[in-house]
Image (cartoon, rainbow, N blue to C red):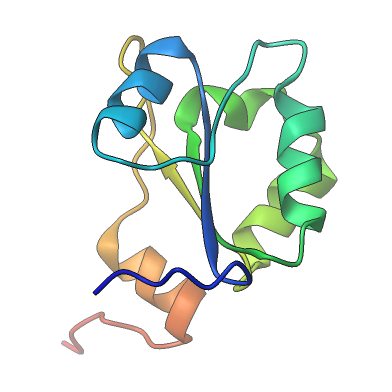
Length: 111
């Protein structure tokens, strides 16, 4: 059963196409961002103590400052996950890099 606890929210930041997709699957906290508003909305979501998961379009990453990118990479609450944007090129974080970042565990197989 999904959590209805207001202190455990998922927020999605992305362009219109991504926002529509997440709204269609039932997420309510979806914010459409433009290139000009991306960094500001990202910072607002990161500062909100009720946000536990922040899903952001990969297209937002280049709009963030170096400090914001480092904050996203090191954050566990909220956990920040960048997802491919509906259009354009993107960079995907590997499963082993995600495990290392979130869990502090290396999935690399010793040789």
